[in-house]
Image 1 (cartoon, rainbow, N blue to C red):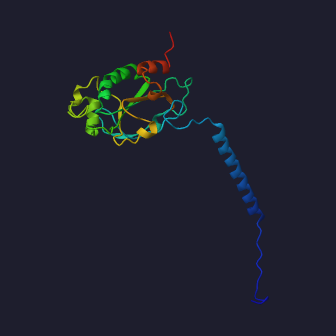
Image 2: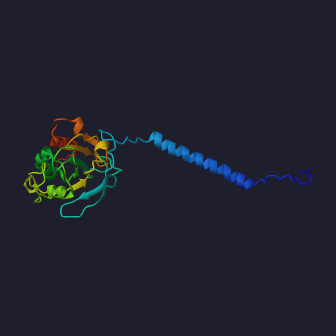
Amino acid sequence: MNSEGFRRRNLVYDDNADARLTSGFVVAGALTFIILSVVLFTDVPPIGPNEGELAPNLIGEVHMPNSPWEEFELYDEIDHSWDNESSPDSKWFLIQWMDTDCSHCWAEAEKMSALESAFGQQVTFISIAVELNIQNHDADRDEIVAFQEKGALSTCRGGDTDCSTRGGEVHNWAYFDDLGGSTMDPWGIQGTPFVVILKPNGIVAWNNAQHQGEDLGQALYELLPQPEAA
């Protein structure tokens, strides 16, 4: 191509666009600084099952007595802004892992009724029904409901006992269906029954594995705020 056919094209400079671009970089830099400051200087606990950590979330379906199964998410229930001084009435959580065919869970059912009767005003109870990889442990939702409601079903405690004969009262709290066992690894569950107590903001206050042999009722009494003397 000869010099006459070649046309040199010059860039068009827009002072306003240049200023807008500079402002955009400034704003982006400021936002990045704010985000980094929040991450670096906010005391955000790690997620995990150990005491002092934020409990892993629970997402699934729960059953209340004489009600249909419904969606549940633990993080929707916790009080994210809780502190013991400004929100003394916020409820704590007791989460129990159990298996309807587990003889130890069968024996603990009466104790759970007594604990809920004593502490139910301050604590939200949740039982998570799992199925251990053990012979004759073969539950379904009908068995979960029968165990919870003391219904007539002859497949509890290893498949040879009527659920209506277990100790304690009807368990008037949520039973969470985790027959697939998806919660066991994140929460470090090795067997049943197993209990974790959470503060109202979801922070783990007491983990069964860290208090072997300790009485659960005594742990609740020591953890929960006591009413002021008149």
